[in-house]
Image (cartoon, rainbow, N blue to C red; front, side, top):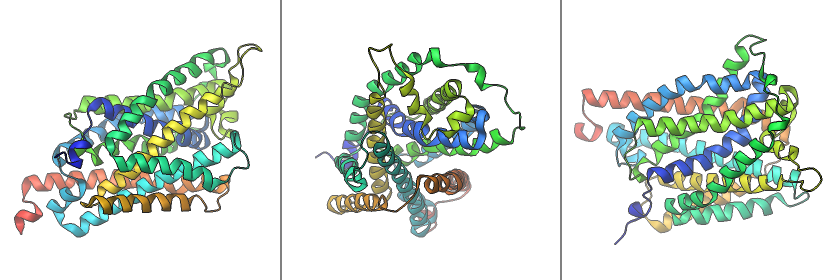
Length: 368
């Protein structure tokens, strides 16, 4: 008999594809407008400077992955501190992941209505995306990763295409000078870039579903890929539009599609951006739903499926909250990203301390 755990095992290649699709959308859609807003021309400097502390954070993450082994996060923390702390930790993580799924759904629905389906019901659009994500999450992690593997090649090819086709429109001299207002804008932007890069924490949460041994070089390479997924379109947006104009655009990475045309014979290639965005949104929401359900000690499959359905319903209901785009943007800049950064950094440090303490003592279960 094949267990759910075995069915949901994935390898390192599948992990790369999954993270690229999920975190890549975050870097393109949500992060770049924030960086341009808070750091201006120095946004790309902020994204680049994060590489050095990022590599150190990844080293800590690898230590946690090795310490956790094949255990779920809940069971692992129970072995250290007991159930009350475990419930607090996994609930905090689940809420953060749910918030990220909501951001993805909110931005996808808003962009869809403003760009190519004006006047469409928000709930109708949300239902369509959430229901397919729910089905994928219900089937399991392999279903999500296989779908990511099918969608990713075209997404990557289109990314290289839009970058190459826009070369005549780029002036990389617009990236300079830097630090004309000091290094404060870049340092401020590092917090937001760091919050997005820390999406690799997902690997720690689902590491018990990964059949391959996770090494530092794997994670460092994946981390650098995420940095590249940010720097490429970010520098391209500044080079094409200038820092001031790029900061005024809501989604500069996708506005680059509108600059492409081949004389009068071929225009409106921004249609391809719909495929890129919806592919990333589907994978991101699917893996979010799966991971939230996986965090909790739910052994019964029927209860798990009911929980997934409740999560999906809550996600669709959240989309009905009346938020103007201005209010929403301030919400993610002032609250969501700083809170995410602090949560993931605090969790990394606290869990690292726990592993060090265990080496010098005994686990909670051993003491009792």
